[in-house]
Length: 376
Picture (tube, rainbow, N blue to C red):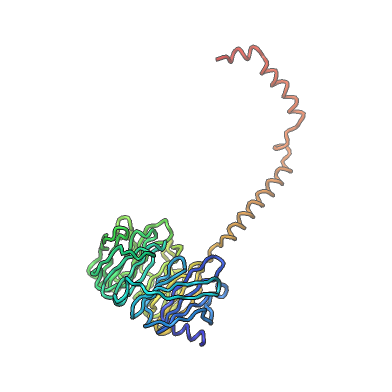
């Protein structure tokens, strides 16, 4: 099978994060089949040879990969299945397991794991929301009428909240620990919410929502301590089909219905990368940041999967930071040594003067009159 043909036919894709030293993997979904392929960080490309091919029943709708990288859930037109990965490096095997709680429950439009992997949520086409404890699959929330139909969902960084949007334009917040609805985001009569993502940097407790207001497309920002809107900005300026956020929370990615992708730096809320017509006018169905590299994975029904290296400043690697600190330490040591050897009058006190002062000090300390005056 030709690898490029596989990528062009894959209509859904998601990263599988592996432990340090192992290449990240990507799961590709196409009609009737899943494929696991390795990602080459140096060339920022996917291998043309799948490690695993697995036949499935139906067409993949979406994936939710567990943060551990050991398993993922695939939603298809015929239900949900759990897949577990075994092996190390490029010797990977895949096993399929049914999820009893999600058998015969209809089409699931949205799937999501919490950041710590302790929660799993599904949003059905008929508006049914389910939140499970993972891996026990104990039900935490079962709400048949959560929405008219699900559009998007995302867990907060601490797993406490779940945000969800509906095809009718509403957005709701759920408290996962208590299994109850918390609030509904306020909106104007001409405003509809579409996609949602929580901030991930651990310092700014925000919720980002794409919204259509009149003829404008906006990215709105909400304070999750009060659930009040604190700002908005028009960025892509065209209908937005998907929204994603990097694992470190520094960047947002927006995909359009005509194949454009733009990447926004969260700190400045400014566009730092733009790929126009990346999918040649096709609607982008999924978009996701690589776990460790400034690379995004995007898919569309017409043009399959595309890997894009972002034109954004490279992040410092851990070894580069240690090397910089070592360099600064060595430079400081050299400067100190040079200064010490060339600062005779400051550092090297004359020995003769030191000896000449000693009798005077001893005389003062042994003076009886001095001692009497300092008795308490």
